[in-house]
Length: 101
Image (tube, rainbow, N blue to C red; front, side, top):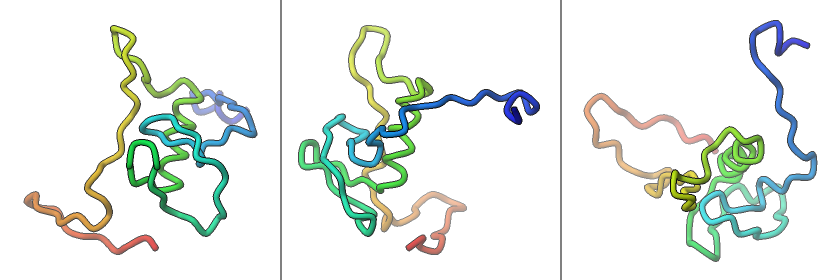
């Protein structure tokens, strides 16, 4: 396998894992969405989620590569930036990149 050749390992998750349907912030399953829905707001916690970024975070969690509990067992699900895509870059040396969509 190519993974071993490069010193990596492949982790398989369930093929039917609803990674784009589950909020990566609170864990609520919101159900299927048409493919043209690229961003959505969780009705439970109000997080504004990019479909692909949200799915990536859920896949990391399903593969066991993302920490989801702290030392005391409390939920510390990975949080997405709340500023949104239209945030103004205020840090020195940063500049706005072209929109992806």
